[in-house]
Length: 335
Image 1 (tube, helix red, strand yellow):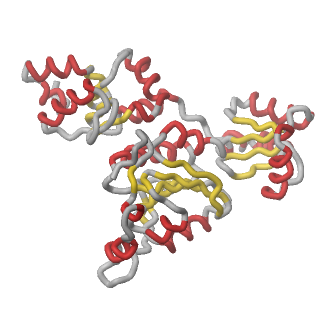
Image 2 (cartoon, helix red, strand yellow):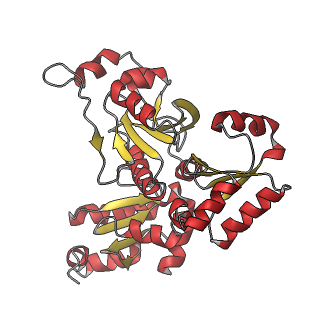
Image 3 (cartoon, helix red, strand yellow):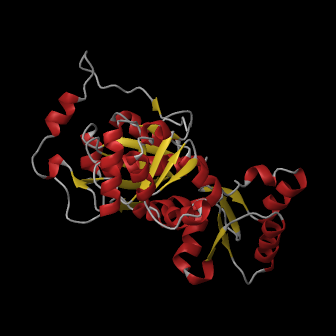
């Protein structure tokens, strides 16, 4: 059952009927024991699947010092697939943040504990405690929430120590965000206890405390500063990665299961009739990609079709290729 909001996600069955027992029975191994194996996603150690309550709790415990982002998804919800792609891209950018995919219906103990009623839903954990939540398929918001603990620099701008720290970061071309502790007394006092660090400034990378000015100076002197602070992934690099994610990539409004405009619907019909495997990216879910790709490809409208990283064109070009009998060979990369 789909929720009424455009990006709010899909209601999970347990919000309509009590299906906890069905979930538990369905997810048992043949011998009747829940499968607690660690399922890694691809080659990235910070992107994984949690398939049981025990594994979920172990992941939170083992990553208590870093930010953990958990995607509660459903296999039958198309928006979840798109958000999994976003998670994969974020995992590449934030190496010290753990990204966990958890099928909500398969691990009902966790879903019910955190009141997960729709998919996709994202929970953010630090120190084993939930610190934030995001309901629905909102890629820009997910990106921002995942990015907030990364490259985070808490500084007291009126203090000499903070000015020195800022200057060092600038001199080494480190991209960072800042938070003025004078603007929030609760954060100012609470962070001292949370981090067990009594003074400011405090520098964090991917949610982990690096230290204050003295530590930053030591990193500079030892030559370790460059390796400590992650390099920012440029928009161009991200676009190249997305374009080459699949041999045939279609950037459109919506996805394979549900086009969100007439042009995208038409091109889907043509692509499906060609019987060639392809992936889609919903530009409505990521404004940065939506605007950036126009400049990158020098093509101002959507949809946009790419084959082996090369722009083929939009709907009109695809229609022409079909009429000329060339579409199949172009999609296979033969032309």
